[in-house]
Length: 602
Image (cartoon, rainbow, N blue to C red; front, side):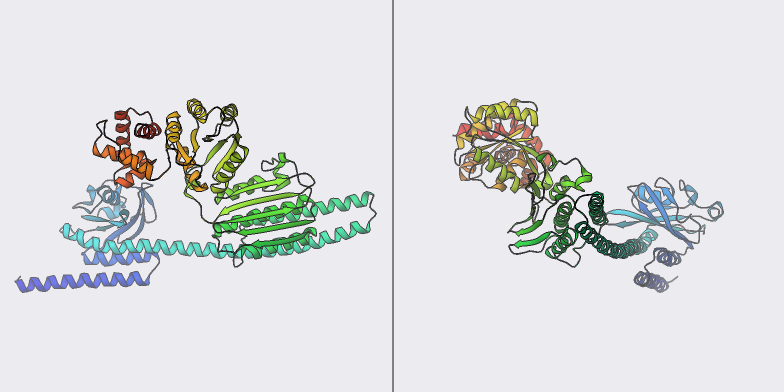
């Protein structure tokens, strides 16, 4: 063969490859069903490689299995699932790259029928890779003794494997989209039928209630007939409420295409029809677009509250209020009904009496970072107040904690409790104490995760902080200090406090300190005085330069993860440096490290 003949043949081979790849690209554009598309890709690559048989499998490494998705010219038990320790696909995944054998008999655990196996000679397989993962394997079989696969064949097969990868991903996405469309269509039809059922039942039951009320007015006030009519009315109202709850739980979303205010007006109109209530909606502030999940939770709480009023309250009036503020939304539901005792409040055990129950309403509020409170008195009605932030704070997703508030002054105790509750609903104030004795008793009984201690205590806050730190189990203590009193901060940290917050801080700062303490971290007031002290700390303990950097950041109250991000090192490395700093300085904890540093510099 001359050089020119070799060049012509090489050019013909390249042209054939380009033509085959173009054909595969056209197949990808025109076919979305997985099996026919994979068979076309297989056919074109096997023909180009001078072979007549091949298979493609999808791989699930997490499950340790693979599934035969397509084959041509050979029977590979298509559709069956096999462990990754068997067959050519298993070899490809194990080696995470191209694999070839001169004899198929050398493949461990092959799944070819005996009839086909007798005709096979060489075999080659390559992985189908997507975003760093192996999602399948493409395998080609040879029936010619002289056909020996090599690296060039592997490179060629990998070109087609890329198209097969796209086919797998696209087809799976298409099938998933079709499934979502089917589910959406079925859900839409289900909701339409549920709406029709609701309207028909509501209209019929409203007419029934109206007729029963008319009959009761016309019937003698005393007697068996009046009793039966009143029982029938109660039964009808219970049925209406039960139907509403069943529909609410069935996934019907009246907010589709409607504002929260419009849906609440519709709910109140139902209350008027069902019970003859004087029901009104009051909106304050400028409405803003709400997150769909938040709007759904607000509506569910309002619906449950209105349903309970209709079913149980014997009220004449109900008012629902929406207050739009700059960073939050408040919902108020008030009625003038019979009310109930405090023991039947948020911990109402009779779920049959209150449906989803006030506890469930509280859970709905907390699920979106909000809070819910209730005021009720027998004979004086009920008031439900719920508060929702437009955006959840990091602390709500990060940690939940029960908190004990200790302060001698009643206004300070109430202020701290309210400030924390409204700044971060993930924290629950479980108790308040005015003296050291009350605080220790409450801590032993309630076992809070965090104790907030003000420095106005008679007998000294230092003694209480030390006693709480020595108790078992010991809550993390956050001390409330006067602004600028750095010596008080040092003394409180040495006594065992996890952190300090100045009385000039806002609710967000208090919430951050509680969250840090609940995670076992320390936090101290920030400012030029502190930063200057930290920067000028002498190196008398023989710390390395990196250890001094880590100590300075620890003394600012930063957790290990934040220090790692600041210094661009691993968290494990930070933990090692913190351990070395504690050992060399003799400090027993991060809090003591902070306090000791400030103490010898004051």
